[in-house]
Structures are given as structure tokens and as C-alpha cells.
Length: 318
Image 1: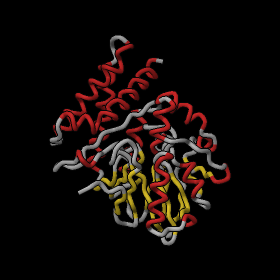
Image 2: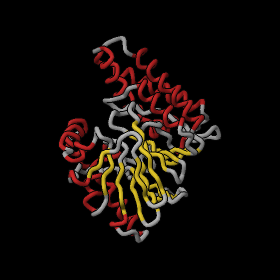
Image 3: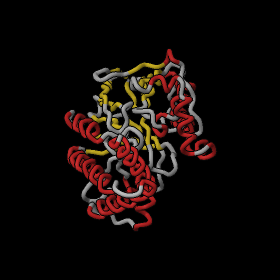
Image 4: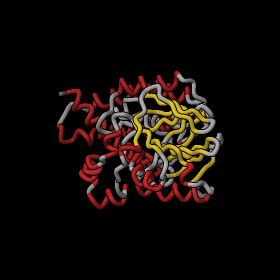
């Protein structure tokens, strides 16, 4: 079956592929409550036309979109916020308190991404980052909620991946939109043992203890499913959650073991250790892809996780 950019998940939830780098890497979600809609995650600025095309296809008026909700500031989650808010005249941006000022003035976000990727790669991958009017921004704290028709969305502060991260519990689906807190689980790696899940330790705010507390907080809500940005819906999340917690500890042990030696080659050592670890875990889980295909699926995250662990090691030494 050819890849579908839009997928109906039930409970009036549509998964939208953000077209970031490859099919099936990152998603955002359209939720309906009565005559109102909410968009959770925005992808990049390049994702905005994809979201607007779905609204047009469904004959949804742009004025019906009540809220735009990125789980945190990383540009694969929030890069499209400004462009989307320009196109949605009555929507309010709901954002973590630590993220609001960076949505109003995203110059530091943009400069940081350009410093990492370079101008050309930034433009190709992320497009742009556009500011949002301050009077259209609402900060959401732990315990806050909003109503969207017959849906109630509750907000939970979930640091660990990033300090500016929250997750959103949806009453109608009894599901949580987890951003990056509940890790990554790409559908092609699912086996008869279930989804293959792994933590994400993107630089620069990875905090293993905080992340484990956040994962446990989500599991304690007894959700029936998790909606992952990377990628799609994960049913019966308790057992994958326990595996995720154990893997956070494994990452820490892996990083500490790789730390001794020449600082100039630390990232290389971490990547080698992370690749071996992920490949072993995937094989133990029954993933039968070739090594080349597995590298294609996980190579980006192996590099990103290794960078995050390197930054974390440096913070422990300070």
C-alpha cells in the first residue's frame, strides 16, 4: 500500500505526515470537537500547506480551528507555528510557559538552527520560523485545560527531553499527545512483539531523571493510547513505557562507558556505541530489516541521541 499522508485514527483524530526528510518520520494531528478543531504539533514551516490542504479537502473553514498546540519548541514540532497562525485568523497558540517568548520572537530559535545546519540546509528542511502576535499566545501550565467541543484537553508539564515540553491528555480518546517525552516508535520497526520504542535525547536539555519522572507521570494517567510525533498511535502503552524507562537507564550507562578518552572523538565513540545498542535491541525485538535499511530508519536518531548524550556528559562534568 502506498504511503498515506493523512490517516484517520478514530475518535475524530487525523494523523498528518509533516513531510520532514522522509515519509513516516514526523506527524501532527487534527482533532475535531463538535464544530471546532485543534491542531497538535505543526511540523515545520514547510508543513503548513499540507495542513491547510487537509482543511480545504475536508471543507473545514479556517475560522473553525480554535487552538494550535506544539508540545515544545523544537522545530520539527513548532517550526510551522507562525505560518499556521497567519493562516488561521481566530486560533490561539497554546504553549509551554518556557516557550512563549520564543514563539513571539523566534530569532534565537532560527539563529540556533542556522548555526547547526547552515543557511541552505535550514531553508530546505525547516523553511522559516515566523513570529506570532503576543496577544494570540496563551501559556499553559500543569493542570490547565481547554475545551474543544466535546473534548477536554488537559496539560501536563513533562521535562526531561526539554524543559519547555508539555504533553496533552485528550478525554475523548483517553490518549496522550506525547511529543518526544514518550520516545520514538517508527511503524516499519513494529514486530509481532509490538512496537519498537526508544528514547530521544536531542540536545541540549536531556535530563534522564526528569525524563523518567515524566514518563511515569504519563503512565500513571492510565491512557489507552499514546499519539507520538515520531510516529503515529501506540496502543496499550504500559509495557512499551516500561521498556522505555529501562532504555533511558541504558543510555546513561552507555554514555558513561564511552566518556573516558579523547574528547575530540567522544561523539564518534558515542555514535558507535549507540548504533550497536540500537541494532542489538532491534534484532532482539525481531526487526528483520537489513542493516542498511535499519541504518536508514535509525541513523538520524543515532546521531541526534549521541549529540544529546555528549552535551549531557559535559553538563555532568561542569
